[in-house]
Amino acid sequence: MINVVLYEPEIPQNTGNIMRTCSVFEMKLHLIEPLGFSLDEKHIRRSGMDYIADLDYQIYPDWKTFKKGKEGQFVFFTRYGMKNFNECVFDKDRDIYLVFGKESTGIDKKILKENLEDCYRIPMRKDARSLNLSNCVAIGAYECMRQIGFSDLSDRETLKGADFLLRC
Image 1 (cartoon, one colour):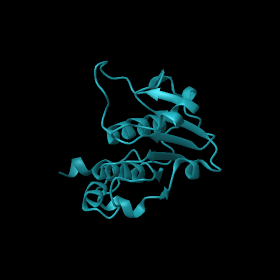
Image 2 (cartoon, helix red, strand yellow):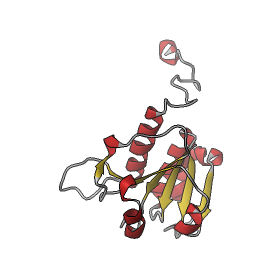
Image 3 (tube, one colour):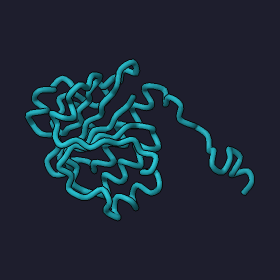
């Protein structure tokens, strides 16, 4: 199973967009408190659209509670990562946890220090501070799905039909 972990997210629009990403990729979302918003905010509903109803997610009071009993491959996305993201190889035979930090300060530095070998940086312009959180999640989620073969995801339009453009 592929999991997205948000460590203390602050912006509801980002989290709503990430909820939508997790739902369409069939990934579980783990939210670690404190959250910078309420999950019933209209911004969450608008950016998550109607996908939130199908979302598998869980909320934890802190990192320690989240981590308890979890095993698998943990991949930390951070501007401080000493490895280039393209070096990351996802292990489809284990649970995968893609971990992202809050918008203002990222993942707690103590957590990163304890997991240095699993910290990756998404390449970007050297004088740029960071990418948008929901964009980082989309990049990480897509690459993970690509490496494991997109599991059971559809590569054809099914709602309007594969021949939709031919019928226009």
